[in-house]
Image (cartoon, rainbow, N blue to C red):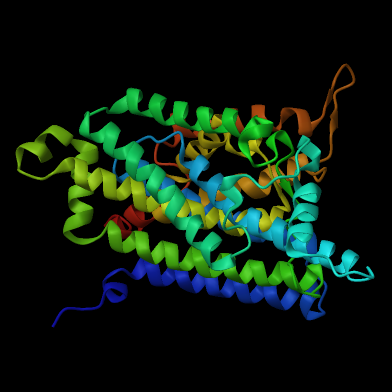
Length: 392
């Protein structure tokens, strides 16, 4: 009788236990529960960090396990954010417009309500008409489906074209970066239908709900924790067994795997597509907590940061990706949020908001040179030394 997946993968159980304890601790100490030890803003920061951990493990699977250095996965993350942001902005604006027109002597028609909503949303870019892309913005189920379907379709089409042409290595990385840049430049245009550089704002307000930000923040934190847990289990299952062995073999020697009769392109396309879909889910949970999304979030540099997180945490380890994303996200919030005190050298003052990216780049170089396996590799070092034990 075969053991269950979780029994044979103890590290997954350990991760889920740690995640559950962390979630419980934050819940007890949050403002929403009355304890007030952890502020609402920091709960949002922690919730966003969990979402970044989710896309980090997706990136680790596609790069660390399959060997595809994608510099475009943050585009899928942003698409998920835009998909849910469209519904949030439409529904919130609808409530505001209907409330303002309810006192009119003559009830407003549906066309007048639609025009008023369009003016409120697109007036900032000199328009009042809904673009075709907003055709389903009124429907939460359809927009939730778009969170997964749109990134998945984009990844499927792009991956099919790239993998069938056997584009690999740095050329594939450049193609994924070009895709991200093209999408970002398109979204910057006012006629893109997504408000150009203004992006979508006010996403932290849940339509039809009177709940305060303290309660909303903890609920989104719970949703992010559940998504991270499910995502971790999903990817741990993908990289285990025969499929996991083939995926690792493709990373190590793609030509040999193809010679053995495996359809390499199908495996790569599956990994690329499923990680893109999970990235979309992570983005859909992240941006309501951030409150705003604009095209700058999809710029190629964001995907490069994602690769840096995975490298710092330890490529080829799911928990390493979580460590890297958590480490960089929280440090970034501390340095750029004014938590780190500036250092006055007399002749020059180090302002960490200006030097944070330099520090991040230096950390990446040092980890690459001194700890090629990343922070997660330290666990391997400790385990090996423990197994060796003291010398007789």
